[in-house]
Length: 415
Ligand code: FEO
Picture 1 (cartoon, protein in one colour):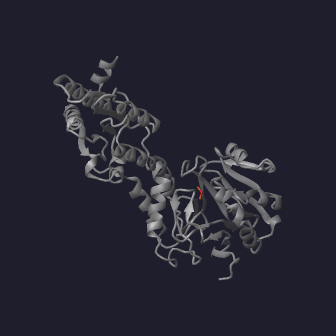
Picture 2: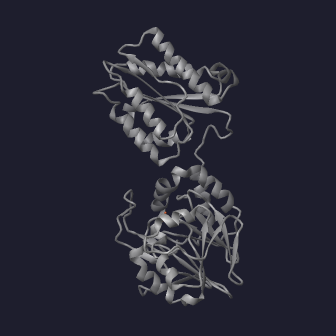
Picture 3: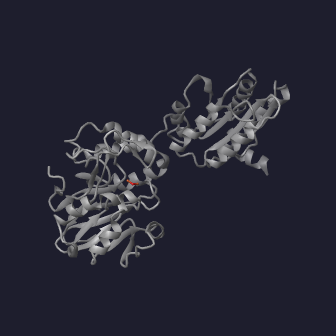
C-alpha cells in the first residue's frame, strides 16, 4: 500500500489517519509492542464533507496528504472532534486554517478544554457547535448523530454514529494501540491482547461511565466500529460491544445488589495486626447482608487483588508501623487502585505498632485521596491487643458493615 493513500472503509467514507509504528510508550503509561495508529475519517455526503478527528501534530503532513486525496478543503463543512486529547486534535488548528467553511462539532464539556489546549498563537474556531446525544448533522444523504459518552476516557468524550451505513466513530472507545496497515480487524494480526490491555488501562477506571455509554451504543445497528486507535472493527462489531459489557460487569455474587462485599487485607509481623483483622471480620459478619473476606497480603501479589477490590463495596487495610510508615505491600496495593474506579467505596484502616503508629493515619489519608469514604476512625493498638482493643476492632467492623448496608439503626445511632 502506498504510504499516503486514504483507505475507503465503506462507500464515501475514508480513513485518513496516520500510522505510528515506532511508538513504544503511549502517554507514559501504556506500552505497545508495535506502535499505534491515529485514526481519522472523512464522510462524504451530497451536500457536505465531514472530517472526524485528526491526528497527533507531528503526523499532520501524513494526515493532510490523505485528506487532500479524497476532498478539497472548501468542501469540508463539518469537523467533528470526538475528544480533544492531542493525539486526535493535534492537526485541528491547521485544519481549521485550511477548511474555512467548516463548523466544529464538540461535546458540551469541550469548549473550555479546547481553549486551554490551543497554543497562544491559535485562534479559537469561529464556528463551533456544542452537541449532545440526539443532535445530528445532515451532510446530504449522510447523517451524523452524536452520543455523549463522557469520561471514556476524557470528560469531553463523545461518539459519532453514521446511521445510513451503521458506522460508529467511537473515539478511543473500542480502540487499542496496535499498528497494522492492513487496518481491518479481519486482516490485521492478533490484537486481542492490545484490546484488553487498552480497556484495562484506559477505560476500566471509568467503569460506570462505560456502562452508561453501552446503553447508548448497544441498541445501534452496527456494521462497523471505527475507533480512533487500532483496527477498524468491521467483522463482528457487536462482539466488541459485548466484550466491553463483560469487562464492565465485574460483580459475581452481588449482581442483585442485595449483598455488600467487604474485603479486609492485612500484614502482620507478630500476629497482632492479624488478630485485629480477625476481630474486624467478626464485627462485620454480625451485619446481615455483608459478605466479609480476609486476606493476608503476604500471600499474594497485590495486583491480583485489584479485581476483587473493583467489585467490592468496602476495603479495610491493616498494617503495622515500621520505621514510621505502613509496609510496602499496602502502598503497592493502594497504588494499583488507580486502574479502577473506587470513588465512593468505604474504607478503613487499622494496625498494631511498637512505638509511633503512623501507619493507620497514613493509610486513611491515602484512602481519602483516592476518594474512598472513610466513615469510621481507624484503630491503633500498641503491640499486643487487649480484649478491649479487640472489641474496638469488632466495633469498627460492625460500624463499617452497617454503613455499607446504610441500616436505619446505624444511621440513628450516629446522630
Ligand atoms: Fe487516543 Fe484519549 O486519546
